Amino acid sequence: MVDRTGVDAITITPYMGRIKGLQPFLDRADKGAIVLCRTSNAGGAETQDIPCVPLFDPDTEQFYASERHYELENGHPPTVLMNDAMRMPYYKYIAYRVTSAWNANGNCVMVVGATVPEEMVEIRKIAGNMPLLIPGIGKQGGDLKSAVLSGIDSEGQGIIVNNSSALTFASDGPDYADAAAKVAEGMHKEITEIIAQHLAAA
Image (cartoon, rainbow, N blue to C red; front, side):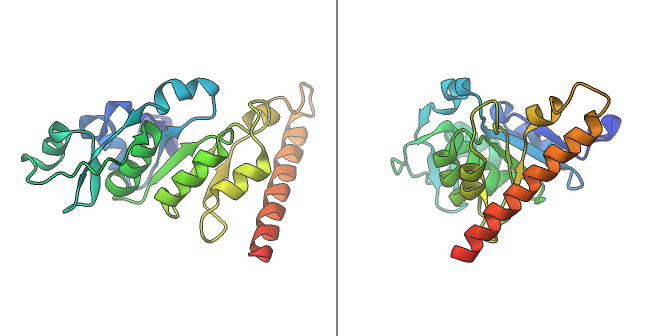
């Protein structure tokens, strides 16, 4: 698919799992694999907030959904799996899986909505300096400053902020290209200023 379309990155859902689902995309070190983690739409809570208590393997330092999942990943039954009662929502479990098991080629990005800045902070703690794609600014109600400060990594980077509505509806006339460019430039300037002020105060 990525070769036919010529895209540089593709958004994938974790629901299919890695084995024979996401692996072909994760294997493409030359392409970005953008994994849905915590989306910006309110309905995302219906599935992404489901609580789970994954099993932890101290040898691989990874979380597994079940013993069957461990065997699928490793080719043999587990010897020791710890249930350390780390209750977490599904989106957080996905963040652990993407960070610890799926990003071998360093090509993963996680989608984390601007509408959930508190959850973004928790995901950033798990993700380290992995880039986050942040939708939900504008019409969906996400606040740009909160999203930027919640999402940036330890170096004040690591975010790709999306505001497609503002760009799409920048103008309905022949000046659309110029109008959209001004929106993008204005947003870039605002993001840059937010980060600069944050780093200066740190």
